[in-house]
Length: 387
Ligand code: FE2
Image (cartoon, rainbow, N blue to C red):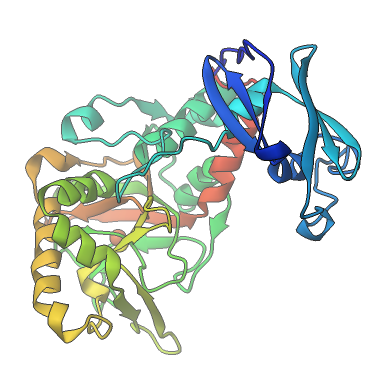
């Protein structure tokens, strides 16, 4: 992605509040930056290591009385001289524009950052299904596939492996495997005495996996190795789109589900007792929608909702569950052998329709941390390898 260069000016930088800040014009918009913030981020070798870019100072090294003595545009950069240190640093206008914090408006609860596109079934059906071998062998295809996961919260593959270990082969393309008590990978197929309802032929309502972990798994890979059953279609729902719709249609329900923690637990096998406490709608301190935790099978008794709010909380919970049933939000498809999907388990809910278990059905899954994927994409963007 090639970004247009930021145009500095016109006009000289203007000192504000006796040099406690400076106002500059970037692409025609006035933006203020504090002296102490600029000093903290000064691109000079005493502040950041020239080789690895790591920071060499702490907040204790910043004189509290830091002021800007002088600011001017010099060779297209903002040159700032700080007192009392008598330090000069030049700032790239592109960097300043990308990091400007002036004029941040109030954001609505449940906002999402621009790299995310919320979807409904119609949009999601139009997304490409990429070829496993192409994604594995060709970097542009791999970056495109990873970009789909970051933007839409899921991506599909075809012509993939159908042998044991298929999920791990796919996981390697996305990041680093998160091992759990289910192993590095796990099989989803019908079992005679299942420890988990996933291993039966029952339908499963839309859910996120493992909300009883802290943190829950970031990405999930599900690869189809065998399928000779009737039914068993996969369903994906953009949980962020559903939560935003809930915020719009029923703000009180959204408030309750984001305000109070739910509890989740899993104790299906000897020696394992996983428990976590977190809201079903997770928001950052600035109201950003960060995670959904929705799983009827592992919901424990609610003990953190006050008596006065409990009846309303159940109404809210029901409203959220009804939202996930809306047909226009549900992407429905069948996974044939060799097909796979990777989805963001903190955003996209998955469901499965019931199937007749006379034939073989074998899906293999594994969990992958999200940061590897974000890192690969960010590095490719910084190095200009994204198209
Ligand atoms: Fe699941």
